[in-house]
Image (cartoon, rainbow, N blue to C red; front, side, top):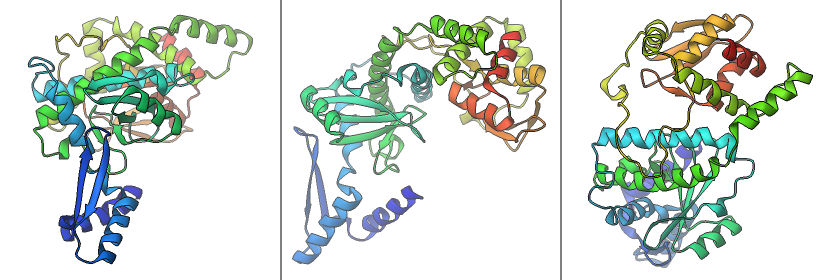
Length: 362
């Protein structure tokens, strides 16, 4: 509703008096210059106040950043088909979501300073809600750190689950709504997200996942039903995911046929095969988690859950005593991240300890 409350005034402005408001991005400071061309001083004042209130001056920020990044791309850098770019972007954000539980506790945005283009440095904050995180931009490292410490930003963008960007305060302005060529904007997004992925993965590599799993198992020796922390749960899910990835192709195909027999509703939902492309330091594919077919198999075989097809691509999960959980999936066999899995278990009425024991015994 908040987005709608902001969108309606913006749409009224675009339809009625947008020609009376001129905005321009200062390329040296990454800030906005605003002026009104209304004839009457009172009208000019009113329009400038509205622009300030609703942050309309930020409208051109995303296109400015993506064009500046795109201008620095090498000819062969992320020069792929649109479907391949989207698959890579989604894969990198998937990894970022998997790293979140391990990095969140001691995470400092000051440690993420990405020089994505001349005069453009970006940092990152983990976020909750519809985005994977918040990215801010400044013209140099010193100003970026200053903005982080002051909790302010010149430009701010939401990193969406599909790996594209949208304006934080004007979220309807996103990569797909810009006037620039979509492939060019996706290549620019890939450049930004791959830099972020590499920086986060450098932090994640220092995490000893095996020690986290061992710590939890030692704790449960004294209190068997002790629920794991978010970090412990994610670590054990990764361990189970690694074991599941070693299942034979025949076993995986059998799981797909039994638990996900229906193909996606349209071609856009088809999963793009992993690309044989060097993503430099993006570490694509090094993080393991569970596929939906594995989750459904464990729920049904080991935890007495009912699994049935819902509307369209929806899967309905239920266990007597719990609530129905409806899970939409737009790919044939998507990854299920630890936070989503926790939400499923909570709604269905399965404790985390009970799930982990069942998964390990499967």
